[in-house]
Image 1 (cartoon, rainbow, N blue to C red):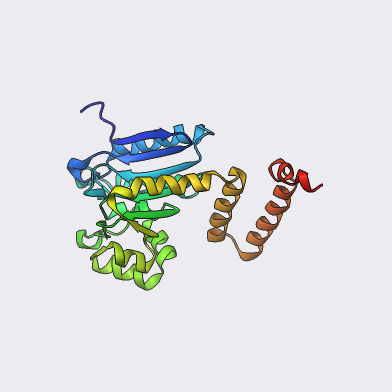
Image 2 (cartoon, rainbow, N blue to C red; image 1 turned 45 degrees about the vertical axis):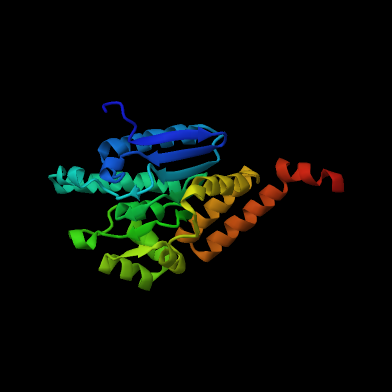
Length: 252
């Protein structure tokens, strides 16, 4: 158990699969899992061949239940709680604001911080039996990994408040209706669908994918003029770039 991978990293050609691997505690996250998460992201970011990331859970019952309550109980000071929150926020921001597309493949229930992890994915695909619940309020907490802000941006104020304030669990149909999930598939098709989606994206120019991801990030933080300027300048640079020039040589 000492050497157990709490988060497994599997590489399939140009796709990295990160799999939460603590089914005995609903794939929850503790400090050791965070450390492995960080180390895996270091490896992925250093490998230029990896162009997409798929995040899923082991087994068929749980994607992730978020923070490990035993680990949370061990945090005895405000500073320790604050540091843990910032650490996991930084991990998820590396996903959302990185150079690789991130696909969440929800293999079962996503609870609490598990839903916060999903809000840091660019796309969210779920098995048809998956369920979702932000259970922070029933436990006297709020979102601690930056998921509250991302949820409001993703599905809007009303739907977000309903999930956050009631703590209710919803099925995949409702999750799709409000925009939390993009697609539902049969459980046996989940990973093949996610991999196929990653491959469709990876067939395109990586430089274009990176600029689109950056554009989405800038749209979140920058004013309209700055975003438009970035989009226009990036287009002009890519129009003069080697990738496009090689394509249009036959027209010269």
